[in-house]
Image 1: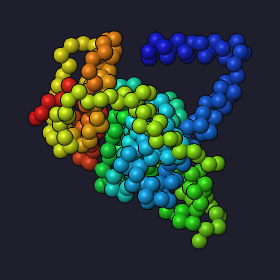
Image 2: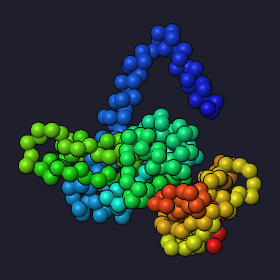
Image 3: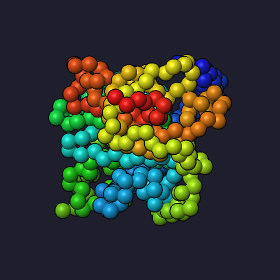
Image 4: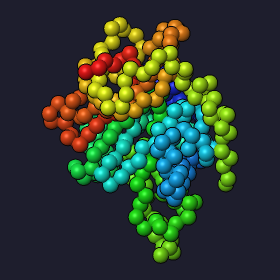
Length: 197
Length: 117
């Protein structure tokens, strides 16, 4: 653990133990950042790519530009590359050297993404790591790990789940999880009883 | 909720002002398809060259243009920008014959880290 991480942890536990900060409030702020500000933007990009083949093509050629079409861009997203998951290829993203992450589309990285365990193991035994995270990929599926340790930031476009043909863009957005855009999960299935045919 | 697209002039400027893209001082030495080997660093100090790649062989899959060089920037030096590439390594090249046969590791590496192989 680095100095700064120890310092932040010490500060956080002091603030909590003296009753100056409510951990539940802190959790809500983090959740707000993760669900309202961050991954929702990426989910809009993915849902648009699912619905609009022209957009998907532009996204795969120039991620930064296509993401900006939807109004997203900024620090830690200046050089974006989109990676498309298919039935035969699964992409998963890591930063082995630190915690590089595409902030404009995903927000701040989850703590496991920054953990030495994830960073060391996902380049070496990704199938096992993904299994431990609840994602089982058949051995026939090729895994491409992307170590974003330099200037480029990656966004995974998960496969569009089956049974979602009738869903609107807004409904599709709800199926795109943060984890599916890092590549450690899949997009969610359609909600039950949604009424589409 | 309607999103307003970022204007084109801002997009063109952005990677250069806020990001690391810079005018290339020389033509790229490598192109997609080239086989390259990652050199071990000659001196200690900050680098964006992960140690698990030193001496390993991969294939260039994408060229990203020239960007500021973090190794020099960390020393407070201005230094020229260098071309950045994505290089693809097979799992077996990095982890030996027992590695997952359907695994590749793709890493962004600056030109000074690489030599033709």
